[in-house]
Length: 230
Image: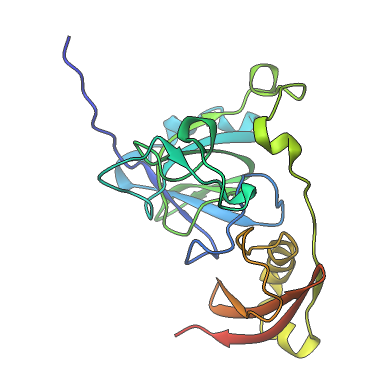
């Protein structure tokens, strides 16, 4: 039996994350994050979306386009374990996988029929970088896709924490009003790698058209500058 392994990009996501840094490690954690999905011309067929409006959530199958490698490793070091503990790649959601594929459930906010772009999906809660290629979209089915009683492996033992964000008003005014809620949610989620805890280090996160600089001390994130990206 012959095998065909060709996969086609059907769409790309568009949002305010021009780089990987700061993107949530899982989907649907930050509801204020908005994005759009624009389909490639070949897939802008109205009939392909018939019935999609009846679902609240959808699955995205996509590529970690910034993590594609020729070789793969059977173990990886999850950031949530501090970057020092190795786990089997198939026991993690690491981007460094044999096929560099990602799977995310996102909320379907609206379906827009655009005169030039065809059907455009408006979503929230995505953990993808701007321009990420999408290979497929499937509806989320609560009766089979939701298992709240299931074990979560090593993630069951990791305590979540939310930072308090101190964002000076004069700096906040440099951020478009439509982006402020989502940006503050991203910062509160602590975009730093788990193994970096230097209170004097200044981090920078690119969000929209701005580079936001901040420090973290004693569970408080201080925004210290907002610089326009070139």
